[in-house]
Length: 567
Image (cartoon, rainbow, N blue to C red; front, side):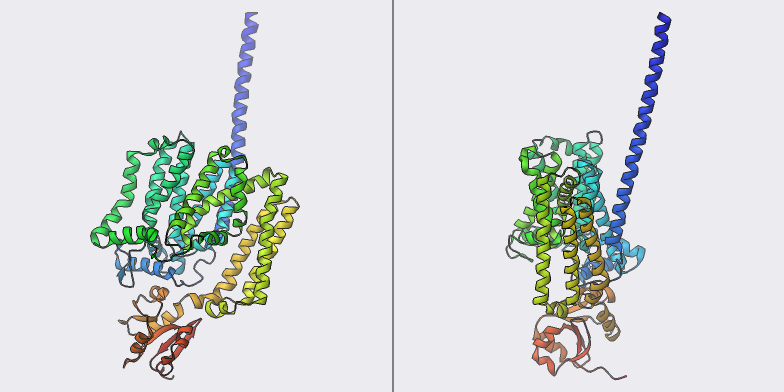
């Protein structure tokens, strides 16, 4: 009997080991299949970003305003060899920190002084922000939520534009997103908490180099309020580490110290005038009303902004206390950034870009529910945004036909037929999305909106932008002036500096602000040239006998005090 029992025990033990091995193998196969699916999602996101952010990135010339300034500043950095103090038009440029200039300058070193090189860092940072959003959504609610949220972030108007433009805001958005992603991963993952917290310090350090104190202030406010609402302020003790603080200051301090030592006027101007006073002073530049960011968010985050009110309301049905930690974190992220910049005196549409990943994730969670667990009530509620959007664009189409915006073509080069085509494309896609959603095909509805964005962006890139280029860039005039003006002379503009001209000519420029200054300049005994807006030229009657139109491009004129010699 004992031998039989021992034999049975051996058989049982062998069977258990076999089952355990099969289970491990099954788990490995299961994980491998999940990973294969995730690879498809990730490659799909990369391909989408390549379509939207990288396609014909260098096809259009550098535009005025701001893009030419930042591109020229980075080019001067490479040519001068001074990587500490940025300069623009021969003067120290203190308005922005250095990080994005470094990215663009490094791109110039690799690819040369081209439009593609100037915009490549923005496109890469846009891609990075999309992938960080995917990973955060994946951690909160699975790969599907991450994918939907990342697609939403990649396919809204403002994010696409800023991922294809030479501006600093995309750097701040990426590093703030990476900071908050690192915090949340550390907060939820005790095993790897230390490495995520250190990554949080690294990314916040780069955020400070990208945009100044905002780079650490915004994440600190978001993290602090989130922990307060969750009753877990004690987690701050785990976040405050000596190594983290050391890493943060090792990243941020060297450049700020070097530029302050080299330029005694830097610290006061940047930290007081450009940061504190822009937030507090009612006389700050770019002043706007308190409701400024409501239409900015609705327009910039389109088409997904249509679903944002429902995305904010839907999780709150059961009350705030029943929200999961991920949703609370996203709502705090959104509210802090939106309220902070609403309270600031200085307002620009690009400032709120750091909240776009949060609202993308909130709308992504809504669409996850629509695809996986749609209730009849939720399905009905989600039809209203599409219906309102359809009505809006049908009315816009009617308005364009009844009251044509003629000045858009004369001032900006946007043809009426192109505006009409865009309205038709959007209205048609929204109508199709509405119909699909009404017929319980939410997946097709989602990808119809995604496809609409791609089509509209490509129509804009291939049809609209080429006609707009002469109005927004001074590349052609700059190169013509460069051949006419003596090498040591500066370019001259009336009322507005055309900063792209500096990028294409490596010259400095003078701006004449009053009609009398322009008249005095044209009264010179030698031949002189000036670039002026067509409308300004018509307004100054004294120019009729003093100025000769040498060339024109878009809404710009090249004038001179002497006629051009004949052939």
